[in-house]
Image (cartoon, rainbow, N blue to C red):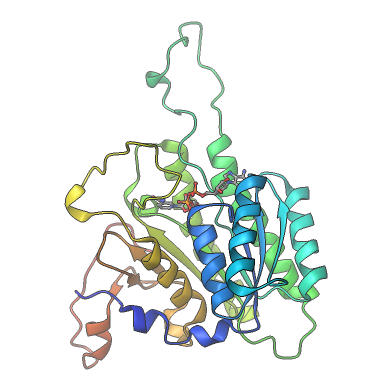
Length: 298
Ligand SMILES: NC(=O)c1ccc[n+]([C@@H]2O[C@H](COP(=O)([O-])OP(=O)(O)OC[C@H]3O[C@@H](n4cnc5c(N)ncnc54)[C@H](O)[C@@H]3O)[C@@H](O)[C@H]2O)c1
């Protein structure tokens, strides 16, 4: 099954022009690459990260490529409701409306959940450290709640046009991973998208989840070895293409999808029924598409 081509992912990218996108975890990796791409496409960005140094570097890069006045930033720990509220307020004050929201900040498994992996439990079980879950899921819920408030109440435009929430899942959303907290969080992100189906329809906003497999960003430990080297690493530019497509596609049928980057070969879309939808299939006459069932339906 062929992947969505880059051209297909960027078919409606002109819709970014004049839009305002808020990105958490913008001080590194995908968040930084997305800030640079969105501003290249004519959007303005509101950038947050707990790492002030990384964030300042992203702002510098955006200003160097797109010019001054395209980005506003604030140090923001996504586990803090107040930090996130302040970031949205700063963005809305600076640019007016907020159109696109990416709750992207994340960490890998920080504290093993499974007590059998720990020492020092002889005197009884200890309370699990859920920091990973707080960042990768609770922080995402905070960002999403704020986005919905801005869409539903603060936005006074008669026809707001493109508005979207693009969640960052993972292939762990479907297949699990070595980290219990991370697996729970990323499966929860898909659950969040499903829970937002009525809201997406009621507000007319796109809600999708981009799910990369391993990609070479700072989240991977130095010396990380891919468990399936034959697949290669998901390319950051493909992850960015998937976000662009998930946000800007004009086809309502592609809404509420998981955009997958499972390997080095590109972007696939899995629709709400859990079927892959690739470019070739889209061109086939109705009823002749093979069914590619995958584990873990949406
Ligand atoms: N790179 C991969 O292999 C991969 C695969 C699947 C999903 N993801 C997801 O992609 C997202 C972005 O990760 P990345 O790969 O760009 O990694 P990254 O480490 O390069 O970037 C993550 C950013 O999130 C920030 N962050 C961490 N904790 C935060 C907090 N409490 N508040 C605010 N910001 C915080 C970090 O400072 C960092 O700048 C994450 O949600 C991650 O789970 C990554």
